[in-house]
Image (cartoon, rainbow, N blue to C red; front, side, top):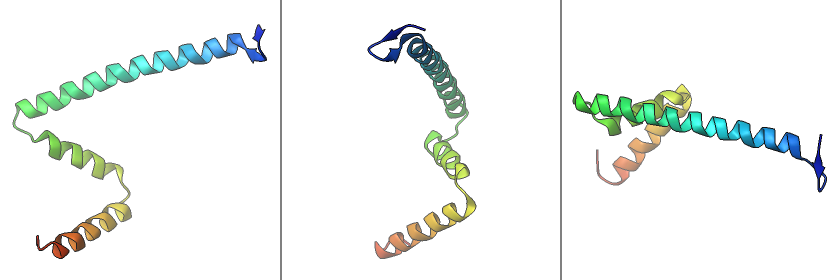
Length: 81
């Protein structure tokens, strides 16, 4: 193992290369996701709503319920419901 300034150069290169590969995979996945949204939009689905649904599905039930309750309170305070 080669050390430069107290840093294990071989290990550092390994980390950098792994991160670069993962970033490339991430970019490919993001392109795939964009394509799926495009397909859904072409069939008439509202992409903005799809994104909201996906965000909500990631939440725990209690978090989603709390957020919905707060939203209702804010809407009532603004005369929106």
